[in-house]
Length: 79
Image (cartoon, rainbow, N blue to C red; front, side, top):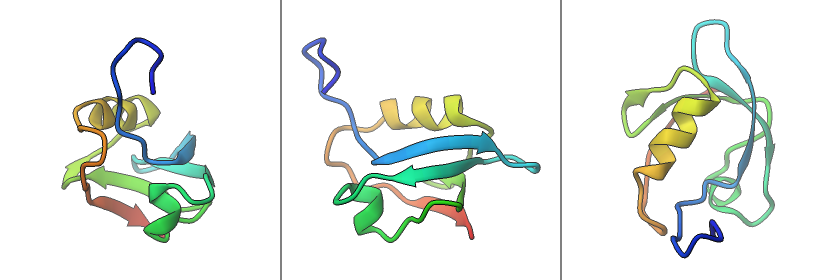
C-alpha cells in the first residue's frame, strides 16, 4: 500500500546492484511474499519482466507500477 490511497503491485524483493550485462540483483526476498512463493532467491539477477528487459532497479520499479495488485507476471532470472 502506497499510503496515497492507491494500491500497488508487490514483488517482495529487495533490489541490489545492477548486473554487468544489465538486469538487477536480488539482495533479499521477503518471506511469504510473491517472489518467495515463486522460488526467487537472493543472489539471482532479474533480467526481464514479462519479456521486457530491465536495466536497473528503476526499470524494475517502473514495470511494477504498470501492474495491478494481484496481477501475475513473468520474471526472467539469471541464476
